[in-house]
Image (cartoon, rainbow, N blue to C red; front, top):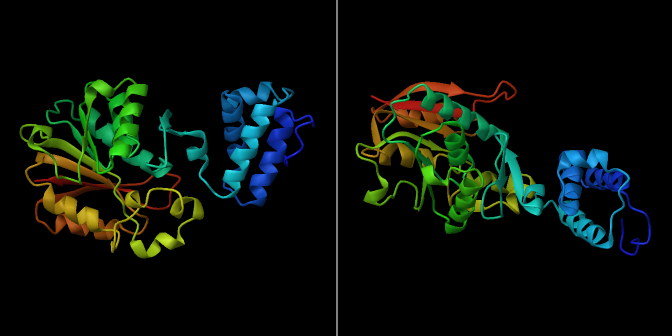
Length: 299
């Protein structure tokens, strides 16, 4: 699909075949799925609709859009940023370069938070989602637990605006309060009397020394502030949470955090060493060989 080929007949079927091959040659993950998402975006339709439209011929504007999309994709710009959205927990989320792209690993954190909320219907203080990013955790929990109130924070005002739009998109904006804040540095009016029932977070847990080893699409395009912190060993935000949440978490309250694949023992030790937390569980998706979520509870 090079420049100057606009006179050729490019059907959706032909575009799909060509784009899949092009992305595969450039070592893009899931080239067929990525091609489908890009074409659906260029044609303004759902991905599933492509399969009934294989013979539809692309117009000049659609071909121009596809050329630009595949050029950027070949440079490893994330597909989610190119099309502006990403599916997570069966919901469609807006994403921009201001936020981390939601990943399947975080769905385990969401599911365990939902399970905890449903098992404790007498919640009073609600949930605090630290570093909300796109809002994928806060919005998903609010969507699937009717009545729960979530406070969502992020240090990035741009991220907060994306999260706010996602809450509106899914009809839960009335039950999520957004604050631009540095971790647990919340204003008094953001704190419920007695503290939150549950604090959840997918913090920046990549050691700074490992950032340059990440895939190009992550290290060059996703917000570094959501991946790591200057000089971080990957555990700094767990330490801050363990030491700073006193007075912000209700007695008997829970903390659920996503962790890196090799951080389980270290994260559990950080919390239990304070003497205020007990280890309540560690979770992983059945398809994931690594632990991904640590759950601790105050005494």
